Image (tube, rainbow, N blue to C red):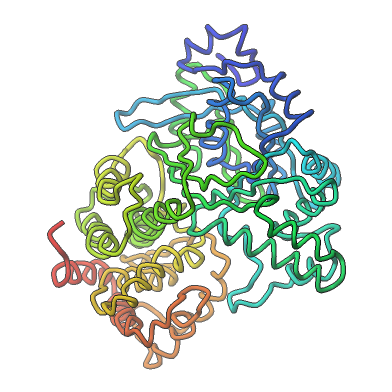
Length: 543
């Protein structure tokens, strides 16, 4: 049996026998290089980073295009750093699950250091501060999910933690955005060194959201007199600090026990899956799909490695935005969320099995081809129809991807504004919003999902969502089989919440459609199926 901690240079043959490719560089050397002259910091040490960003870094290190490894800063879960990174010498196994059932396995050793970056950890706090003070640092990337950027509550007001960060000044912020602003302030004080802050999280205009959040904190500090105007000038000078936009796409589900069993059978020992106290699911290996895209705005004021030599597309912001709008608001993420909602309601536990249900497949085809594709702009680097074709014909049906609707349903309230709101906005602008049927159907399905009983009236556990308790309380009077006379008044606070729905759904008439579909789904057992079948019969296209 071979282990992650085994010397991959002297034991290359044993790794090869287990079907594992190994790095072409010496890990100690890339650690030393990162220690003396760091180049790349990544925030968020989860599965996507391990299977995508770290793999990009490894490719560049293998080619000699980079000499310093990535420094990963985990801001949320200290157990990830202690039990996964430190325990395995900052190595992990990346497993690509191909559609033909085979696994491509690569030992990743591109992480030079892993740090729990939180004000409650003074050692990690000081360590990352020192890294950000070094002029060699060229860029930072992020995969901390949408909620990691949040500074506001469901009503759009600054949260208590954000207000506290602003009032206390830049010494020990508790929000992610406050902590990042603190690091930039440390870099500013160390010499106003340039840097690119690259959000690679999976939502539209991610760089803009990062920039806005950082400036919200920094301008609050300025107003309170804890920083001066020169810091704001530094943050807004694009020769010093940039916030490039990006589009990222690689399905990376939680580590699979079935994949772990296959790895063990092939001679790889480190297959234990950890479930941390903060509910992170992570393992010494990560499993991911073969198809992947990373498009980044080419705006790096302190230079960058040749990222394009590892498959990253470096383009203008407009092209990034077009590619992102294509993927996040039209050709993938809205379809994924629809499957997450209805998959949970129909008792599915895998995405691939959902798309074998012809009605669910027809639902996402009508959403993708019928409602999203007509309003999406072609980014030229990836053709939208080809992208959907690849998604429906190759990616989602891949039985080798152990992804679940329950994982994708996480934080749905935070995803709706982008995954459906942007397309709704396009139809409003065209004066054609009345044409939408399947987006209202999916939103109605989400309301029905929030009742936490499936189509057979079997209770299920809803995925985590920051608004879950608030939404549950609002819908408490609603029961399957009993439609309250005040249903409109009950759901109006949800459908008119501008943090969830950027448009006024009542003015557009969409709220009426949503409520109508929701009522149909409340009729009794089997009502969701009946509602879906009726919508497909009456409004479905031949896709």
